[in-house]
Image 1 (cartoon, rainbow, N blue to C red):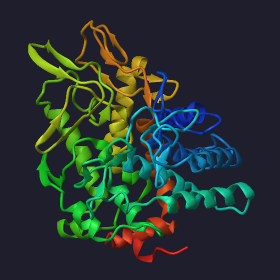
Image 2 (cartoon, rainbow, N blue to C red; image 1 turned 45 degrees about the horizontal axis):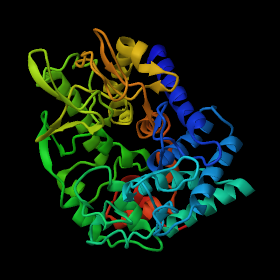
Image 3 (tube, one colour; image 1 turned 90 degrees about the vertical axis):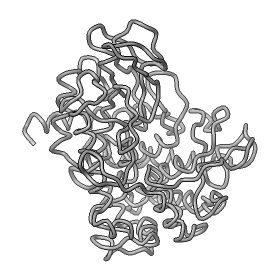
Length: 446
């Protein structure tokens, strides 16, 4: 990178890390779903917070002791939360946690579901800390012990009511949700965690059932496993180095999941270049679709077209699945940095140069922007700036997390290299049928 590019990436990672260090609850360690709007805690965002702390150590943001104590406080609080069927006095069931919980008590927020994918993202952070904090001290010994206890407590077999697939979740009012994770999306980590469990594992057939739902298609001239929102191409890669290792599906199609994510990312850039929806600003300086905030929910006439807009929505572009309302989120590209830095770094600088006055603040990039939406109407989040469009005024924890982590993976491979030594991660990959690269010499027993 040039000196200017290096300085900007330094600044972005620094400010985004401060989101977790300053905004997580000082007593519980839980991470807010969003800031500055009043918010409940997000289990997935807490997993990203745990992942960010060792990155902060390596970047000189905090000391190792400060980070270790924060991690231990968070893990200890999570592990001691009550588990059980009582919807008002528990944080989860059978080792799983509710999607959202109260920031101070850690108990279920309203009537949200228990979430298998959010629990997996939380465990990703816990296992990373388990492997990173490897010194013989009282604090670091406790981190490793509690992370292991949390992981062993999760009953993946219970979460598979229609085995071999794994369900989305459960609620005390309605039991298991009627949906299963199948096909390529953010839940790849769910299956790898479940396959690796030393106490309640699912069978290897679950991976075959998961991959049976893949859609192998072509989009913008690139063959790929289709999934529109870029977060689905990021989340598992935050923790697991999938570059150079292949399961059976990848062997049959002569690529790995890292290359697939690269193709999906570059296809989104090319989609923005063609801009079939004629959204304002789309091109090399504005692209990247993922789940994020949006201005409003409704249909309005802009630029001579009836255009439908959404608030929070999983935006994306893939073959046969275009979900686009002109809203771009910086985390779509920033959280995909390792896949195609030559495309992402110039985009991030362009977003800062073109929109930084309204889009960049104390914790880096705000969540989203939409230059097409210039109407003077009430919006759910953010604000409309005359002649510039809509800009979010919140930071979202699950969108901040991949930025911190993937910048570091691109620069040093810290999270990837650390978790290559975690026997649970290695075991899950091998039981899913992955082979090659670094995995062939990795050890799946402690």
